[in-house]
Amino acid sequence: MTELKTVDGYNLLAAPIEFTLQNGKCLINGETQNIVEGTPADGYTVSLTINNRKGFTLPHTGVTPSLWLLIGLPLLVAGLLVLVFRYNRKGGKRS
Image (tube, rainbow, N blue to C red; front, side, top):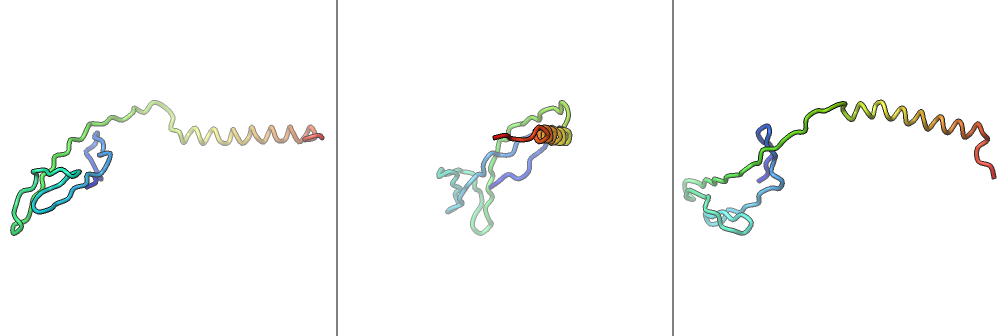
């Protein structure tokens, strides 16, 4: 069983829960759990309680990283172009 969605403010489970239904019993990680009710004729009901921990979100404290990329990458390219043109104007590499 994999948790796909949770209530806002709570964390998803870190790993799926693997279980086996066998002979009217539920095995979780090889241990028998008494969480199965019902009969083969009426069907079975499995009641599993999962304790989710309340998570937290970091507060928004400034500029988004994409804005830094929009400003920083053109400045980096411009700086590299200036260095290349200066290097070539001086005659480049001399042997």
